[in-house]
Image (tube, rainbow, N blue to C red; front, side):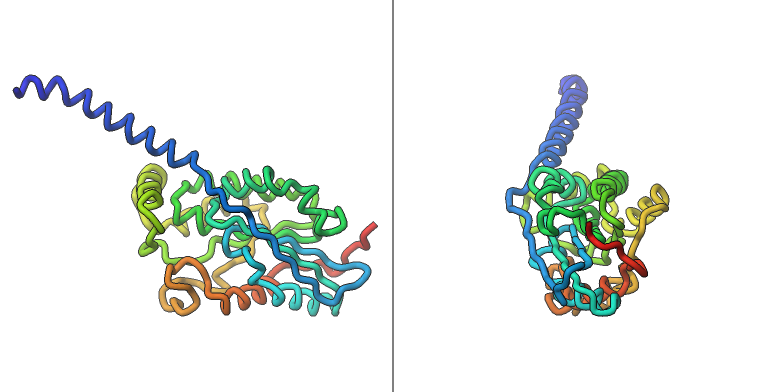
Length: 262
């Protein structure tokens, strides 16, 4: 009996290893099927509107950072017209967002929102799903950089640092999500739950040239600010999403002079 187990154990270990790897790869390749959400807001419409495009995950959905964001930008530009649009890919990490953006909203389709011109400003609002899904700091950095390069024809691209959310006590919505999160958490992140700072530092270290808006100037930690968030600890309430829009409008860099559209 003992001799038989000794013979079987190596094979069982290999089988479990292959099963774990296969499961992990399967979980990685599955995608959500819900469509991205587009919303726009126009303030003080004029002949030479300043244009803003917000691209991100669920925080960018439903235009809940509007109308505060374009209102603040218009005020900062002396009452100039501001046209702001957002496109939100609910539940997507940066890799999936980049892939689906190119597939479902190529630039010609996005830019049709602005008379076929690239926007003056692109704001990238990503990272929350990267940390709670544990996709790995290297993947977050790689695809955040790719997103900035994708909009290289815009006048300027700014990345918002990963928002503070309830990483440790986040509860995935179903068993599949829980399995996927635990596999990736140990595969990429040494089984740690809280990796926000690790991913942030990796982006700053590898791409110091990126223009980064510091989320901590809005909320510097989840603990002590739970009332800003919905019960899941990951999404801001509608009230604070509107306040977030005002914050972005105040924090984003604006040129002293913007060229007229040709």
